[in-house]
Image 1 (cartoon, one colour):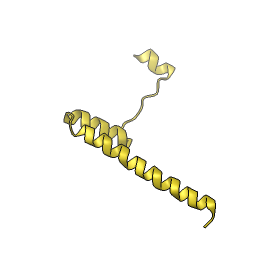
Image 2 (cartoon, rainbow, N blue to C red):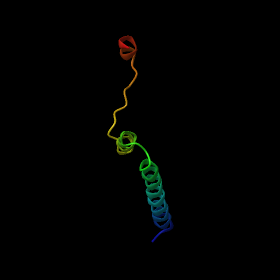
Image 3 (tube, rainbow, N blue to C red):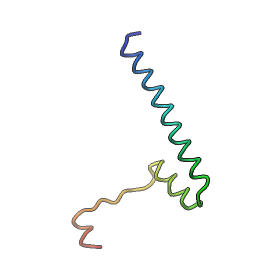
Length: 62
């Protein structure tokens, strides 16, 4: 295998490990929270929440 492929595989393995540790830490902290806070963070982590864009029309309506 060439050097690029070897390095790419190494980086991808480390990335997956870091991602798993990040989510484990997030979930372990959430287990100590209220259910509403827990569910809100889970939705944010999974991408279920929409971000409202502030457009000039939105500023006039608020």
